[in-house]
Length: 199
Image 1 (cartoon, rainbow, N blue to C red):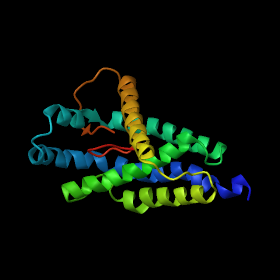
Image 2 (image 1 turned 135 degrees about the vertical axis):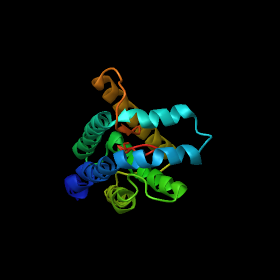
Image 3 (image 1 turned 90 degrees about the vertical axis):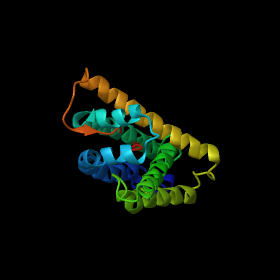
């Protein structure tokens, strides 16, 4: 079978499409959710350092949106590299793993908080199913080796670095910080990010 037929755009650029659906949920829900839940989270998790809560509340809507846009560029580049290489790109495969792990993190957040968290609807409906489907297609095409623990660790590192980098870029583009009336949390792959990360 031809490589292009085995790993087509639905597998590679599908990553970008699935990410866009997921981050649309986050963009639509994060502002109100953080405003409503941040005081409660402070009370429920007193061992979390206050500096963390200040960081969560310090990112305004403009910075959050800018970070999401920057993450879109990261995901698009990974998807394009995956398409160019027929799914063989290590960057694409790592981004795909990071995306799926990010969905698992969202479900863990919702379980810990015993309720909705931004990203927890599209994680079981889009993020995790797409990741499993895409990995199955890559495996059938013979371009995906068995997952090793180091692959999962690399996926988490990728997600963390992408999130940190896109927020750093967003802060730089926004210029000096000023008090803002509409605080938002830090952003993964989160793009995705609710209280614990966006990809």
